[in-house]
Image 1 (cartoon, rainbow, N blue to C red):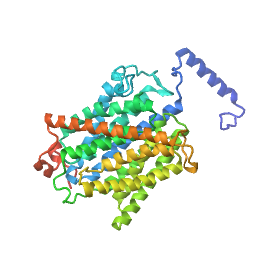
Image 2 (image 1 turned 135 degrees about the horizontal axis):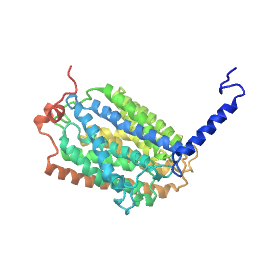
Image 3 (image 1 turned 180 degrees about the vertical axis):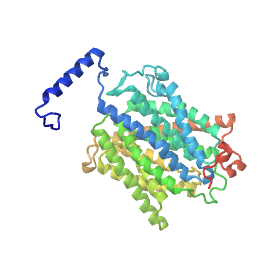
Length: 439
């Protein structure tokens, strides 16, 4: 008998019979239940975004930072990022998620979701399982303290990093996350932060520069040259960050919809504009563009668009990316050459300044009243700028104060900094008894 693509010529009957038999079997054995309100498309997108954001930290951020330090410290940076991933996961399960997102007060959440209490298979957060939402938010909680590593790279004890991360996650990240996304006072005030300009970038950048000031400069800074030991690793890590950021910003829509699509579009535009602008600025200032400048500008563009990503349009994203390239380039040079602050991997001028700049510019380019540069929000630019400024500077001030206190406590308990001899030998051997390279 002649066959066609569906099975048999004129053979709808066999297919119908098979479907009927499968339906009867499902009724007999019990079909799997689908949670009420579940959208499988939204869920699939958030699960994918969760993987992308974790990919940003390991291996993306890990390789990006590892290439920027000296060869005797490459493993220490990789180990810090990897260990922070493990530590924060455990803390998030026990109490972090609850403090950030459970019902509480204007400042902090309660303990009703400790140990993911109530987060079962049927528990929903909008159109997605709450377990997917909680794990997606976990990846944000992981990358934020991992970003702070760049402020104290090459000189902080491994035990101190772990204690600092524990206290910082519970006392800084969880409260600020609750303020903005968990029902706290900044969310009630009307702050626009789509994917973490305040929650992630201002907190991480501020903590990094406070850590750099408290620990002091690396031995030999600023007179001794400390160039990246492996730009190939850094550029590879930067590429992973760029790709992973689509999950970071696009996933923050918490749905597979137009907001997610636009967030990805403007994220890519701002990253490209930031990289190209920084490269041109270097070319003008120093006579040659560098790979380091290009990837740093890309990260500046990504960090600056993050709070705005679900609110602005493509033309606004271009302006934000260009502004990120210029402002973060100037901030980096000012910190290194004028203030001589040894924020080892430029976390504050890129993430802190970029996050604050993006938070402020969101109040402008989210507006629908700017013609081709319009965004999606029906807001008054003047009043929204005030809200954005309050949110940005409140997060910066709170983070700076609490981070300073945490570092002082950790220093009393175990000591923050390695000795000069240990720093000279390198943290790979001193802290982990291993070498990054054995050629």
